[in-house]
Each structure stands twice: as structure tokens, then as C-alpha cells.
Image 1 (cartoon, rainbow, N blue to C red):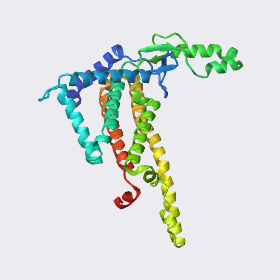
Image 2 (image 1 turned 90 degrees about the horizontal axis):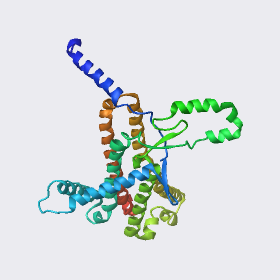
Image 3 (image 1 turned 90 degrees about the vertical axis):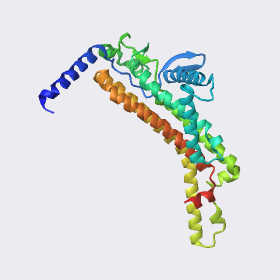
Image 4 (image 1 turned 60 degrees about the horizontal axis):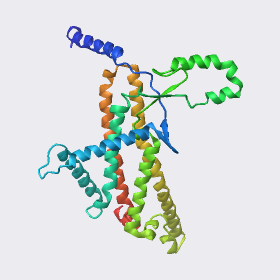
Length: 325
């Protein structure tokens, strides 16, 4: 392609950039690792991620209500989509867990999968575009404490000038804009709660399948030590004990890893979109939005399939585990 033939595309790109910069300009993004509080209901502090999760819950409820209020033998439209989704997740769960446990394994991971998918899409299509819509609040940082320490007289004018420059649209100087909406998965409290629930269900299924003694016997392995007849057997027995304790530790490490995997991917994607949208016109960011939609769905699916896999491992006894390897 020569310069003459590519000239229309260059001109078109410049027009899109100029129009986007003039009419679809985003304010400087406010980036916070923790969810920002919006208001309080008695002792409950409602953050923007919690508020968004309430909206997501209502959206999911209304969607499934509309899809199933008039069930038909030959489904179509929303009912057909919901049946396809549920049947696909059920068959996938059965493929991992087997037919005996699928009815018990299916409910929690499938619910989390649907909720996380909608939450991630909500963050991309609502949270990022409306990141400039929120409430103005005084910053909860260390400036006030530093000022009280005796530096107020020296740096007061410099601080006021800096906050005036950083003040977002619609807020007074010295205030920050707290957005109403934030992807729930971009809140570590949310992902930690999901990870803890998932792991607690794995422990519950393990105890149901093996009994309390059999389940704990996967981690406290003293069989070879009890039957040891020499130094080599004792060494192997001690190795088994050490490996069992590592397995016990990994049960709690899974919660941390599970939490940060989902949180890190969604939070990083949200920050990337906010920063790039501030630097370039919104229309140019469209391919990245499609990528983040893909990432959000994949991360929800990874959370789902790992949950079912953890359940399967939990109901497998120590002897069965050795034979599988």
C-alpha cells in the first residue's frame, strides 16, 4: 500500500482522534487499590464495589426472571440462552467431577461464574465509562496528619496549588472524585470472600466423602513411620509427614492465590483502560475494551473450573491420590 492509497485512512484516523479528543474526553482517573466508601447505612459502610455488586445482583435476578417466567417446551430467546448456559456448565462439571458428585459440585461454582462474568462486564461497560460520575470527598491520605505535625505553615500554599491542579471536574479544590461504580472483582475483599467460600466448600465435600478422620489423614501421614523397620523407612516416613504438612499449608495458600489471581487481572485491566482512555480518545480504546471483555470471561471461567477441580481433589483420599499418580 503506497502513501497515496493510505492517505484516506490517515486522514480518517486523524479526524477520529480530533473528534474523540474534543467530544469524548475523560478526566484524569482516580486509581485506588481499595474500594472507596460512598455512604453508610447504620454500621455498614457501602463502598462503590459493594454498591456495584448490588446492582449486578439485581440485573442477574431480573435477567433470569425474564428468561424463566414463561417456560416453554420449545424454548427460544432468553430461555434458550439460559438453558444452553446451564446445560453447558453442568456437562462440564460432570466431565470433571463424575456423575456421582455433579449435583453437589455444580451449584456454587456455576453461581460464582455467572456473577463474576456479569461483574466483570459491568466494570468494563459501566465502571470505566462512568468513572467520572461519583461523589466529591476530602482525601483520606496523610496530608492532614502531616499538616498537624507542624509543616502546615511552610507548605500550605504549595499543597493548595497542587490540589487545585489535581481537582477533577465537578469537585472543589482539595477534594477527590469517588466514582459510584467499580467492578466488584477489582475489590480484594470480594475476591477473597469468593475464594474462602470456594475452599470452605471443598473442605465440606472432602469431609462428606472421606469423613473427618479420612480427610485429615491426607495431611497428617504417619503410616510409614508407624511401620518403619530401619533408617530408610524412617526417612521416607518423615518425608511423607513433611509433604502432608505442605499439602495442609497449600489448602490455605489456595485462598490467597485464588483471591489475587482474579483481583490482579481485573484491577490491572480496569486501571489500564482508565489510564489509556485519559491519554487517548475513547474510540481508539475500543479494541482494548474487547480484550478486557475476553479477559473478564476467561478469568471467571478459570475460577469456575479450578473450583470444580479443587472439589474433586478434596474428595480423593490419600491412597487414591497415590494410585492416581
